[in-house]
Each structure stands twice: as C-alpha cells, then as structure tokens.
Length: 204
Length: 235
Length: 197
Image (cartoon, rainbow over all chains, first blue to last red; front, side, top):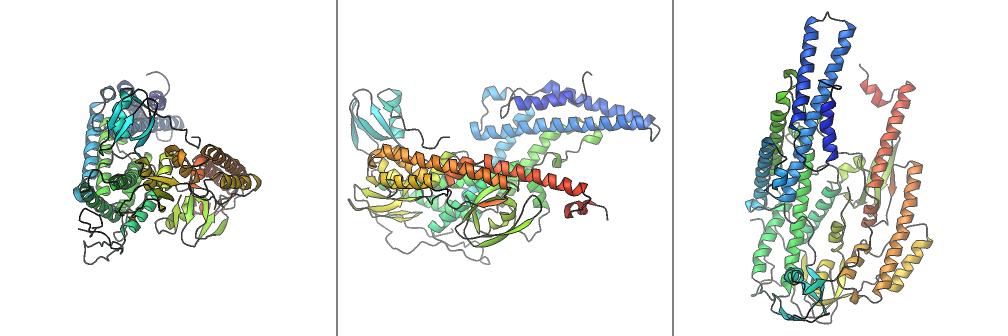
C-alpha cells in the first residue's frame, strides 16, 4: 500500500466535491482499496494488541493512529455512498421514474435497486394522498402562470381558430395575445414569434 | 365525506346563497368538529405552506386540512367539467385549481425533503416521543420515513459496513445524521402579541415584545414555538 | 432559505386589484370565495391572479392600482431617497405586482415606461439603505431587529447571505465567549454542566 492512511478514502470525497450534484461513474476500485486498507489496519492492530505488553507507549500511539485512520476511512466511505444516494433520489424528481441511460451507466446494481425502492416508497406515499385518489407530487413543480403569451406574426397566415371557438386573423406584423398551449405549433413553424418579455424588474 | 361543497354555479345554478360554506370533520364522533369556510381553509394552508417553506425544521403536519382541500379540489374539478367549453369562467376555475394544487404539492414536497434530509434525527424523535404527544409527521409520512431509512441503511450496509472489519460494522447513523439548524436567522411577521426571551451570543438575555403586525429578523430558536401556535408567521 | 422569484410572484397574486370588465360574467363560486358578478363597465376588485387570467383572455382591463402611477411613484421615490427610514410601501408586493402587470398588459398603465424606471429607482434606494442598515446591525452585534416596512422581496434579496452571516457571527461570538469563560476559570452554566459531579 502506498501513501498515507486514508488517502484513497479522501479521494472518494474529492470525487464527490468535483461533481457536486452529479453522478459520475461509481469508484468501485477506490472503494475496494479503501475497504482493503481498513482490513490491513485492523489486522495490524489486532496483531499488535495480541503481541503487546500492555502499557507500551510506542504501541499505544500506533494503535491510536490506526484506529483514527479506520474511523476516518469508514466515515469517508459512508459519506461517499450516502451522498450518491441523495443525488439518486433527486433523479426521481428531475427525470421521473426512468433513469436516463447515461446516468444509469454510472450506477451500480445496488444503486439501481435503491432507486427502485425509493420509487416504490414515493409512489406508495403519493398514492395515499387525497383519500387514496393520489396526488402526483412530481408535477406542479412551479407555480402556475397565466398561460397567455404575446406573439408577433411573422408571415400572413389568415384565420386561426382557437379552442374556444373564436378566431383571430394572423396578419404579418400584427401582435396578439394567445393561449400558450395553442400557439406552440405556430411558433415552431415560424409563423409567429413570442414577443420578448421585458426583463423582470428585480435583478436576480 | 368531509363536507357539503355545492357552490359551483353549474347550468342549473345551485349557487346563489351568500352564506359561507361550511364543512366539518366527521370522521370520529369523539373529535371536535372544525368548521371553516373554504376560504379560511385556504388561508390556513397558505400560511402553513409559507411557514414550512421558510422554517429550518419540520412543523406539525396539517394533514386534515390538506385532505379537506384535496376533496374540495376533486369536487371543483367535477363541477368545472360541467361548464361549457366557451364559458369565460372556465379559465379562472382552472387557474384556481392549478394554484391550489401547486400550493398543496409544494407543501408536501418541502416536508418530504425535510424528512429525507433529517431522517435519522426525526426517527429518533419519533421513537422517543411521548405517546401522548402528537407526531411531527402524518401516519403516511411516518411510513415514508421508515421505508426510506430501511432502504438507505440496507444500501449502506451492503455496500459499506458489511465489508469493514467486524468491530466496525455498526452503521452509527448519528455520524451521518444532520438536524435542523435552529440557530438560523429568519424573518417573521407577528400576528398575536407575544413576548420572548432572546439570548445573545454572550449569554445576555433580553426580553423582546413582539407586537401584532410588526416584522422582525431574529434567530429561529427563541421563536420556534410561536410558529406552530400561529402567533408569528414566517415571511 | 429564500423564496424564488416564481414563488414571490405566486404570493403577490393574492393581492387585490380593480378590473374593468369587458363582458358580463356571472358570479364564480370559487374556493377562494364568491367573485362577481361582473358587469361591463363596472369596476370590481379581484385577486391579481383572476385579473391576469381575465386580462389574458381579453375579458377585462386592469385598472392601474392607485400607487402605480407616475405622480404616486415619484412621491414614494422622493421620500425613499430623502428619508433615512424605510417608508411603508403601498403594496406589500409592489415589485411583483408591478412586474406582473407590466409583463402582461403595459398598455393598461399610462406612462408605463416612466413608472417602470421609478419602481426600479425606489427598489434601488431601498436596497442601498438596507445595506447600510445591515452594516450597522452587524457592527452593533445586535441579536434581532425590527424590520416593519421591509417587503418580502426585499427580505429575499438579502437572503440567504445576510441571515447566514449573522448566524456565523453568533456562533463565533459564542465560541469566543465560551473560551473566555473557560480561560478565566469562571464556570458558566454550560461549562459547569460538563464537570463531573
């Protein structure tokens, strides 16, 4: 083993720090090495304890040091595993019940299992709401907005019928208020453009 | 059924009376009946949402109120469906339902996030709770917490502690557990005259009277109890 | 913990404004309470979210709130820049209300562009005052303060930084105090509790 005690375990923590909130590939090797180091430290301590004449200060210091390293490794390993799980629970809220393939590739089998269990726990909870009618908490993440947008017509289109039965005449350069949901297709076809909203008054 | 909510003005016009709607909690005969208008209920949930959003700790659950409101929403959606598509009022009704559903979802989400974040601490509190004292969580939230912790601990054991030397295999959640930071400073508005003792960092204590209507910035700890009681609202 | 701009807008939409209906609309039995009936040309007070919804459908015009006029905002600005104190704002959510109305229907507000600038000036004046107040607060080592006329968005603008630094200062002072007591051998309650009986 090279380097100082706890160095590899610290690498795990640094890895978390480099990818805050993200899920890089699981550091299987590093985890294994940190666990191996714990085993070695533990065995060394055991050997020393069995051979040691009680009270020898030299042995005592080494014992304490190794014990501290053991505790530190344990702490780092658990922090690594736990922090990844927190990111994984966030996945459920950001991406829904199916993990995107590129994220999935960085997860271990056990992490996928954790995700599946979390999914179930959350689904059970959400299903229980509203006297078991259920309420999907992964929806309505933002406050509802008035669903109208101001649009400017880019090319003559003619009559455009709205869901409510009324119609508007889309003439080049005219400006209208339309329900967001109904003019998305028009925007995509470049028949209209959304008039740029003024920047919000308070600087964010 | 928790209420008689029939105020939607459908084609045949059931509405019109100016008396406030009431609905009671009729689940348990022994329980006192809470009578509130939908508007009062909404105001209460709005306050609960804001407090939960801004408080560092988990506040007592308002699950009965949430359930009542969800039922109102269900009724409202049924009634709105009866309106003609061209009815001018449709958009307003939809917007109201969306706004309230957002309020409720956000409120419950914030609580779940706190339950996850402080899971071990909350579990300890729950396990050491006096059986007479109300829980900080609804029964369903308690179930969520239990399952969440089981899932978490089983992963940490399988991937971590199980492979450690035998004397180090205990999980010791307290080393990973975080708890709410009651020393954070926050803003509040006073709704009922109150008086609190504020201790500064040097240990000096000072009595501060909070007059209804005033606003303060203050450490959370001295006022924490006043939030669930409704004497102050976080803003 | 701070509120997002979306959340602030959401809250501000509970504020009431007056609208001028363009259509007759029967009473709506909302959870929020009865609203209406609406009659063409008769102003009526409704929560801002209803006003915006109806305005978006072009069923009404929004009547400019009395304070969202050039002369009114000029007065507010004058007071705000001259007085060392925070004035009580005409609306607890003046920033959001102004923003939402200007976003949807600037044409309903006469001299909208001038007013926009005035609102921004008022905001800036209040923010710089706030910064000075914070400096004083920290310097004095106060442990609480009254902030009566501060609006929610202003609180959010100094959150999370300000409350956060207060918290650190608090801990800092506590640590120093504990160390002082300890070195003086002057057992405080806290220290005494840790001593074996």
